[in-house]
Amino acid sequence: MQVPQCIVFRATGNAEMIDKALPPNIECYDIPETKPNAEPNPFETGESVRLRDGTAANGTVCGILGSEVRVVWEGVPGDPQWYHQDYLLKEKRTAERRAPPREEKPDTKLNPFKIGEPVRLRDGTFTNGIACGILGSEVRVAWDNVPGDPQWYHQDYLLEEKRPAERRAPPRQEKPDTKPNPFKIGEPVRLRDGTFTNGTVRGILGSEVRVAWDNVPGDPQWYHQDFILTEKRPAELGRTPVENQVENDIVDQAFRLVAAMDDDQRRRFIARMQETYK
Image 1 (cartoon, rainbow, N blue to C red):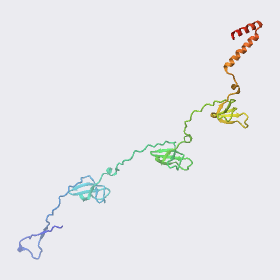
Image 2 (cartoon, rainbow, N blue to C red; image 1 turned 120 degrees about the vertical axis):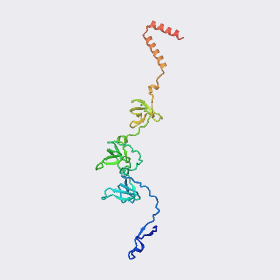
Image 3 (spheres, rainbow, N blue to C red; image 1 turned 90 degrees about the vertical axis):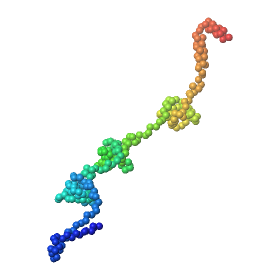
């Protein structure tokens, strides 16, 4: 709102000496306005500033006068210019402006691969590869039967590939110890279930026994040792007990002694035997 002005007329000289042909000499004065207190200038000489509207940056304060700031701009020819403090903002220094905010990143995993190690792609599209280079988390892989230079892959896309020997080796099974084969070639045997008897062992291979059966046509057959039993020989079946054999041996010796005696010795021996076994 414009403050009204008060016009004061001041005449120069005496009234009777005024030339009515000339206009009067009139002076105008403004009545002082009621203004808010000016804010203190926030800038300092040598400080980096920029314009608030962004049209100019990289300026340096080279003078301050009340609320006015004199700024010299980098790369702008000409004398420094005066700007009201409200049109300026402090500008961060180059080091502060270029420093990116610190990001919280997870720790990088160690590269688990080694040069010369067999690898394959995790998705299965390539196999039979060899790691021929490692750089940080990247692995350079040469593929078998794939033309062209080796390619770089991130370690998360690769898996270790088992070597052919490791891949083909069957898991070790816990098997019971094999019993030794109790039979011998030429030994008489029979089947445990009694279906065949009077067999003879013709061959042995591990736990297998090859048996030829009496009066059974055809080639000898293989049987597992658990299905076979040893068969006693006929001589063993008709053998007399050991005690009877000893008595028979004693009688034979007595006969031989009596046959070697003369008549007088034979009579005395017979008399002694009769007296002993009355």
